[in-house]
Image (cartoon, rainbow, N blue to C red):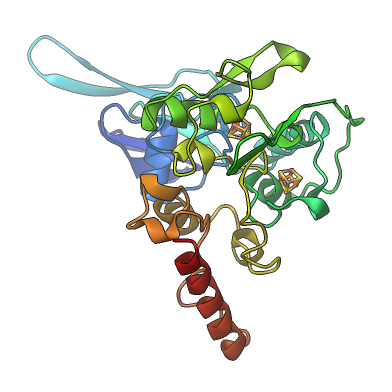
Length: 313
Ligand code: SF4
Ligand code: SF4
């Protein structure tokens, strides 16, 4: 730990020894995100209520600094509390001055890899035939953590596909129960289209409608809930493969790029955050400028992508 880490200030935590300032009310994840420090996660999106369900953002908290008042002046004192091994979800744990947080360590990344493997084997993930491949955060996380196989026996669960909606497809085979669609529908769209029912191995995503089908729900194409799924469980129909395999977000970027997450937040969720409706189906617009390889081809690709957006109107 660097010398600066021994100086407790009222708004600083230390992630892998790096000082990170935070504002009152922020979580460890919030502070890390603002500082450009990547903590792996799947079920978290800034702006939505933290959920803490995927546990990919597990971090270890070591000693903690605590500030308090004495009789007539504010005194800041560091308490070294021996809570080594206390693991918490960064997205739901408040930042507290002086926290010493371990994040990017081999042991924690091994735990995250095991969690990711369990997410794969409890669903039906056939990446080569999935439209989300290359844009999928679960898949990208597996690459990021060096996952080579599922390790555990496959569950091969029988899960229902709902293709009843005219523009939105729900394939529960790929659902990781992150509840992003649940929260987006409730907190952003002002609806209550999705929920999780059941417990443990029987937990599954349900649709709040008279028939239980999407077609009878309030879901609309431009709802944030229709675009926020980090995997290929909720897809917009008739827009498959608009961005070719090999040119998708995670074909070009690592999942841990902080700038990338801001791009996703700015452009990836349809009407909710896009500057105009033209881009509402472009989940991940191509980076601009495009990568160096094959400038001519890139220009064509850019035109193709723009045309797709315009014909979408
Ligand atoms: Fe693969 Fe992601 Fe599709 Fe699952 S949702 S099959 S991990 S690309
Ligand atoms: Fe999460 Fe997608 Fe499943 Fe909704 S459908 S809970 S967004 S994985």
